[in-house]
Image 1: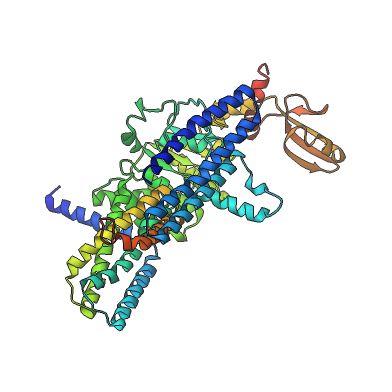
Image 2 (image 1 turned 90 degrees about the vertical axis):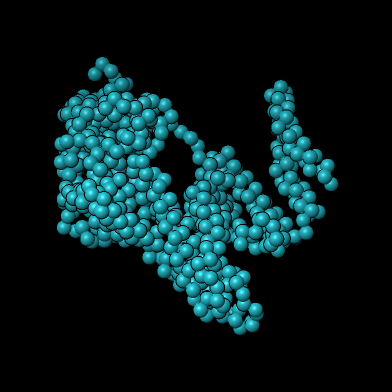
Length: 405
Length: 191
């Protein structure tokens, strides 16, 4: 029996060369039969080997309960692993599975995908691609559609993610080398951040302040009072955070990052989900704070940028599309914005061809404002662009496609 | 700064840290685990009395181990998940120089708290059932409890999901129960 185990191991070791030989054969002859043989051998290994091992255990152990337990778990893991591989290899869109037992299959694959390590597989991709910026004191707006790489960039600046390539310098210091030191300079508020809802605002800030290393109780109390006052939340300091509105929670978040008096504030989509009044108040707070420090904030609401930032960058799919002031950014849309009126019955015929920014019913006619490289209609007139138009032009790369304009 | 002021300062920080961390770790749910742990303990205690077995140190030890593991299970397996649910993980990781110490402090606090609760349980058992050395009994019980708690915490960092960790820990528990007879006299017997 003891010669059996090395035999199994030898078989295992043979699996890789056999695989290679069969693949080579397939490449040489391009006969699919070799691939099939390879697949069969692979499956044999995959499913039979545990059985063989269980057989060995059966002869060696005298605990049948443990044997069944090990067998069940082993095969369960194999099934989950192979299902995960199946979903990954065929890049299956689970929501679109149809046919027999589709409900069951969807539920099963969804379950498999939630199991870490053996079921879940992620495809690596490039989130940011050669972005180079120099940010100065003031409000810096980062604009881009969802999934453009804004959050990735902010996390890299804050040292939460490490960049694969490239460098970031703060005051001439490399962030990768002086990470811990520089992190004291940076306050980072993540996009989906939370607080401990069963604590009061003051307690939460006190806890964070202790974590940030403000040891002296008197300094800490003063600091908490100061940050609460600067976000205008001092009156509600003893209320539970769970009772606050969205905007108030955002302000508590800001208060928390102000605790160690950072020179750089990084705020990821702080205005998302706030009502207009809260948004304006919050934006003004950021501008107020940006007088003596850098505030980097990302958004996809263009109004936020135009009314508060003195520097703006537009990124799309990891590429830097624009970097400069909002005022200059408007000029990126010059010559591409057209306005014209057409009869309502003709509207459907143009609706899908041009990039329509907005259209409005005007009696029998429809007044259309659209973006286009060429004159879209005979009666179209060029109008001065807004920031929004410029943004859309940048995303569409109009300027690059027509460099002479 | 004078020395006394410094000590006072440290004390304030210590007390506040304990209070805040307790609020965070056991956010409202811990009381149920405490109640159920005590219920289990009482149930087994009454059962062993009714069966009329000989009660000795070993019986008390076996009575206390299950409530102890029940108590350690929730905070260590679901701690990270709770931080994730309240979306605090990214904030905690943004704190300079402090990334991992936050949870080290919490783990130690959990163990200390469990130690105190176990001492209380052992005290009750000592009064009601059989006189044992409370401190030594609790100290001995802490070995498997700390081991299981740390293992649950380790799995929770690997699995990154509270429920997943619970499944893994239950599987390990089942395996240990099945193997308990074989392992009883070996160094692999955790209990």
